[in-house]
Length: 178
Image (cartoon, rainbow, N blue to C red; front, top):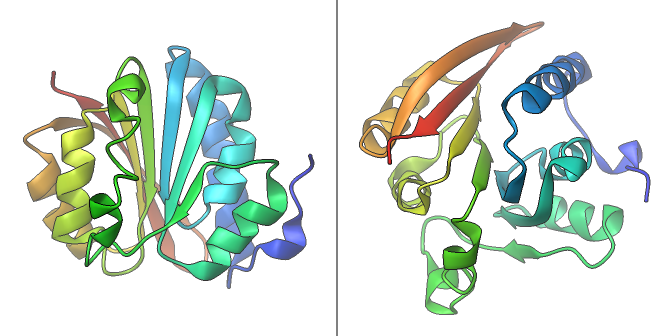
C-alpha cells in the first residue's frame, strides 16, 4: 500500500522532506534487524512507511484522532491505539503491557513530540520500555531538556541533529544503557 500524502498536513513540508532523508540515511546504518518498532506521536504514518522494511512488526500509539485515522487509512490491519498520554487510561486496558515482553527482544522506539514535549508520563513509560535504540523528534529544546532528565536513567544520548527551514526541529538518537 502506498502512502497517501493527502492525509498528512504540515505547515512546513520541507521539514518533513529533511526528516525523511535523515531517517533514510541513518536507519540502514544503525538497524540491527529490530523485531519491533514502536511509534509515538505525529509523523507515525510517514515514518512507519519509510521504516517498514526494518522490523517484523510496528505498533503505533497516538493521542491525536487525525493521526489515528491517518494510520487506519494508510495501513492494512495496523496495530494502532488512540490513547491519552496524560491520563494513562490505556495502560489500565492492558494495551501497553500485552506485548512488551516480546517487543523487548530487539526494539526501536521513535517518539515525535509536540511543542510541550513528551511530558513526565510518556517519558517515564518510554524509559520503562528499555528499547535498544530511541529516536526523539522535538521542536522545543526546553521541553526536550525536561524529557531527557527523565530518560537519562535508561538511555544515553549519542547524536543530535538540527534540521532547519522556517523553524528548527531536532532529532535525538539515544541508546539503551542496559
